[in-house]
Amino acid sequence: MAATRVAAEESSRLLREAVAGARGAGHSWDTLGRLLGVSKQAAQQRFATPTRPAPEDAAGERERVLLSPVTAFDEMPLLAERGRRGWHVVDYGTLYHLLEASDTQWEHHRQPWSPGARGRLEAEGWTLVKTMTFPWGYYKRPLGLPPEA
Image (tube, rainbow, N blue to C red; front, top):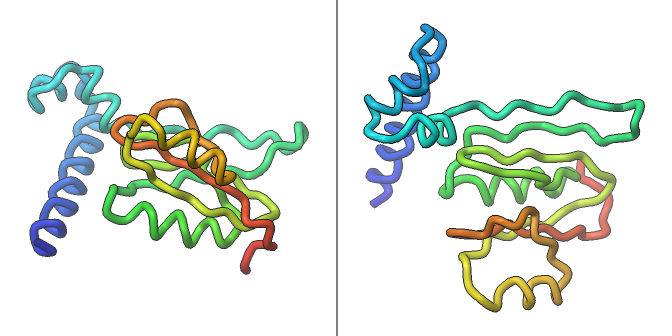
């Protein structure tokens, strides 16, 4: 099972690199979608690299970083490590999480969709990162501890 997981991650990485190379060579999302057997919108949603918003220090916004690529297999340990250093998720999508700096440690939780989970988690102090929760949603809560160095 572990070897299959590694093979799947490597195949995913190679496919992302091939798509990035094809886009760099000028191929359209429509062409890539046809080759992948999906619509151009599906190809773009899956493989487009999200952009990092420009820092707006004058407006008092916090620094943001993009954590990518991440998969369901490695994202939670990475979020736990970043959370201890004061980073929390503000957005996410296929293969990425957008993190924002803060002055406290954070805890992150991935919850498979279920009708009663949101109310229970919010009662425990968790905040839903964004409303899309299928097949799972991401929650966060501050720990009230200074970030680790």
